[in-house]
Image (tube, rainbow, N blue to C red):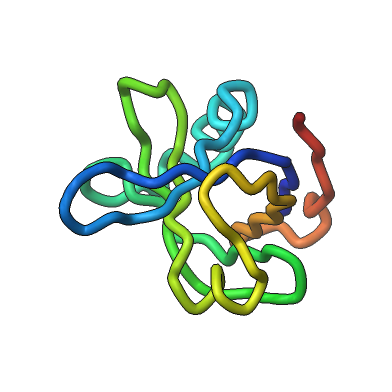
Length: 109
């Protein structure tokens, strides 16, 4: 299954300075319902992400405070797509699905 959404990039204020987007709550709820059985420790869910022309294998993590998943954005992706803090980006996430007939796009804003 594939999902797309737009979100603002934010930077974690800790020493590592990771960059993330927070998935919309409605999308997070849908993903958890459809794919939650595949979650690993700490709410980790493997996915393939795409921003612009850049696609990479990654994972999203469920954040109970945000009540949604967080997608980390690697430095290489930020550099290639010219992404900075507070940039609004269009993101596409793809999850493996055992039934290829049920794969479809869903858009959340």
